[in-house]
Length: 361
Image (cartoon, rainbow, N blue to C red):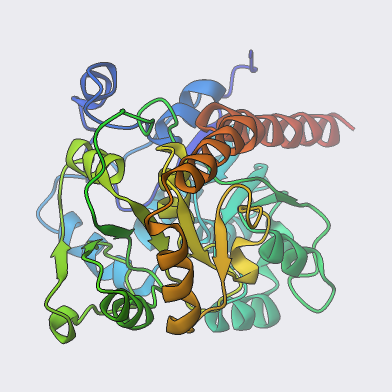
């Protein structure tokens, strides 16, 4: 893919350094690929760092910005130099909102693509209504159908350029390993997780539960003391996480009933590993699981229903294998890493081309 003399830009906020060991980790099967790195490579784009990254104030500033979810510092820098880029891809609305505002204030019209995750939150709804900043976005990529519908709706963001793209998992790293199952339920992640329901279901079923939760964006605080058979892990390596998936008898994704794709990473990783996956049925995850085929769906906040599903497949290896195989096939068909990167790169290419034509016209 060839571009003109101005390169594209992939904007990732709160980056303090470039991990020089990334390629080594990927090539040695010690870590999955990162979407923003591979997207930048697909676009032959820059991954800019702030010129003061590494200074004594930069890391504390980034930590403060993470708390509010907006990457002001990096967005301001990229807005200042926006005219050197042919298109900018913001990896979330946390970058896209401040960048859009800053470019509008400076009068820049560099084409801008935003990957949106939680566009319909209360804060974002106020942002769209009060500022209209969404109309500076040339395209929005949504990993949930409900979010794409909200972005396109006149009563939502009111834009015409929102695209639904399945989220991704590195299916080369997260893959069936053929390891012997252990008798535990595995749940991974923390954002909008309903672990209270899962703990009650697992306890009632008498099944051990392993929870891996270390998200810095978490809204759920785990209090596992109510069940002795719950083990909580955090900040483990990707290799250790993969092994936990491989040995789990069932992977459960217990999510609150939200309209964005909370839980999608754990869902896709479990499916890619070929494990039977049980997930809450939410509008945010609509389309990711074909109930009864690629996984099993249960109503949110219903420990009885969750317990019943777990017990139904716990001692049925044939059923678990069927669900796991179908889930893996669905990932390979629609939710693989390269497919996601290719779709986002094509959207950015189309936006850049349209921007070039508009400028020429």
